[in-house]
Image: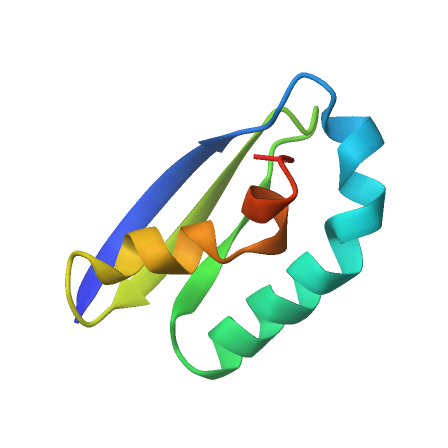
Length: 77
């Protein structure tokens, strides 16, 4: 397994976009944590960045995990 720290930058209109995707994002993060793919992380106090630590079986898997997140697909990140 590979451990990756991912530094994420939120969109300029983060606060407007976040609300409609937040529940799905949190549900997915909890599921990934239960399955051992998320070790921890969270947003900065101002909400403009976040750090998430993932554990993945191979290097290419990190892209898929991030790009399937509701915050990614919804343009929040």
